[in-house]
Amino acid sequence: MESGRPGQTRGRILLIDDDPTLGAYLARVLQTHGHFEVSHELGAASALRRLQTELWDLLITDIEMPGMTGLELVRQVRQLAPDLPVMVAHSVHDVHQDHRNVHRAAMVAARKVGQVYCYQSPSATIDFRPAHFVPIDRHIGVKLSTIDIFGSQMAVRDYLEPAVIESTARYWARFCGGSHAEAFEVVRHRGSSPAQPPDERPAAGSQAGRR
Image (tube, rainbow, N blue to C red):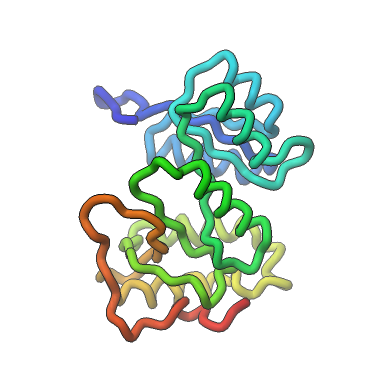
């Protein structure tokens, strides 16, 4: 999905999420920072109709949706557009069952993809074992703003507190420089090896011990 000239979009993304606020936010980020043409659908049925009549470069889907789930959607997409890349990502090391299901779906959808990484969600467990780190100094504000969408859940999910998110990002930065970093588990990396952390690192930074 490369842009040919300045001002052109890098590709067309079909985004499916039944949360109108979150979906609109994700679409705006992809349009503004990624320069993609993004269409947001609230359900799988409407997405399938557009897949039958339009060409897309990437499908990004939620998993837990009313009617048809994201996993069911992916199975139908494979029949309509077998070569369409599908993005569903979470680490299997997570306290939430739906996050673990997303990971398993991603592994099936990305079985022919050469580079596969899993990011650390706030609800990742101590078993999260990153080996690739990316500085996010310029993006930590956007990450915190995204997490703030779920602010109403902080009373029962303390791992969503901004201080926890930021301190974890600061901890991971010790392995790649800068002041904040994102950590990734490496599922598959065909090509040059990603940066490896020192042996003394703990499993999940400041969130170690959470289950």
